[in-house]
Length: 102
Image (cartoon, rainbow, N blue to C red; front, top):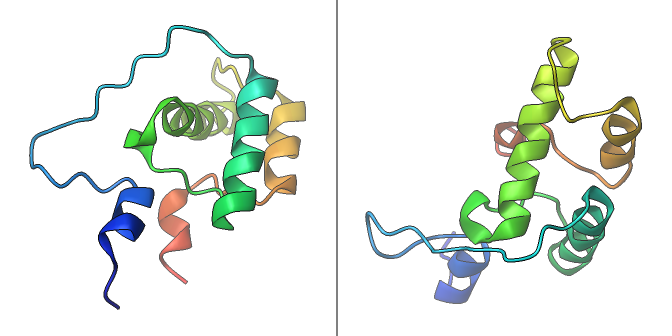
């Protein structure tokens, strides 16, 4: 399929090789606030696969995946059982590569 520039940008595509977007967040948001942002993203895009380089939400999603892997391996993690149950309720994909294997 052919994608438009706006579709690629919405997926987090960076058009300049070697360039990384500069995302600085001056305010630390709580887990619940980021979860609410993820709900908004999901409503708009129809999925929970937030590009890692798309900003603070993308970084938070990456952190959740890492924390979940540690949680499952019984390693020290910021993931709790409550969070591990709450994320899949909205269709969160803990292994983003699984989405593209379908």
